[in-house]
Length: 190
Ligand SMILES: [Zn+2]
Figure 1 (cartoon, rainbow, N blue to C red):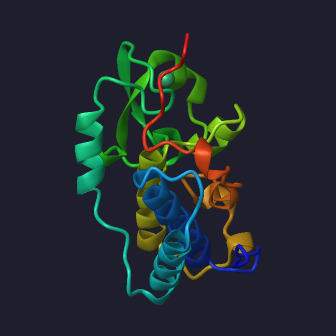
Figure 2 (cartoon, protein in one colour):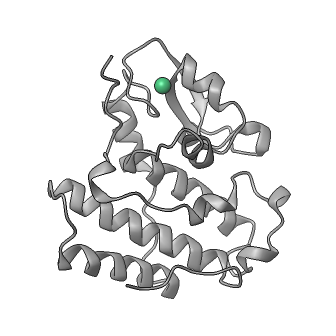
């Protein structure tokens, strides 16, 4: 089991860790598995190491835009099929871009509850974890922002919170067990 990056590790290593986890979970959920298999751990290693070395880059957001269109009738946070509003995934108030790829569909309830909070920490405060395809978009946007700001080689602990439009603690959240994960959120049962 590789160790997660620490305070002195660079933002790139933190992104690589999350990216590797994301790839592993995505593959396992996509395969319909309830337990990780050796292939899934290999995928995690490949993405994590590849991202650190620069051999693998996060893909552009084209696939994420297709996902958004395919799920345009449900809230990307809770899966509810309700009257939807447009939400900036990385809040504009924190410096998130006003670009189409930062805009998602959210129900009014999630939209106002999230406000200008960081998406990952906001969901964590409700004991929830983002759906994999929503986390993927978030991670790509956050990484793009850090690349452009030339912060990737700065250590996690020395990047001031105010310098980022997302919360860097989101790169260190505990990933729940595999059966909890969904590619897209299930609608509530009620
Ligand atoms: Zn919602």
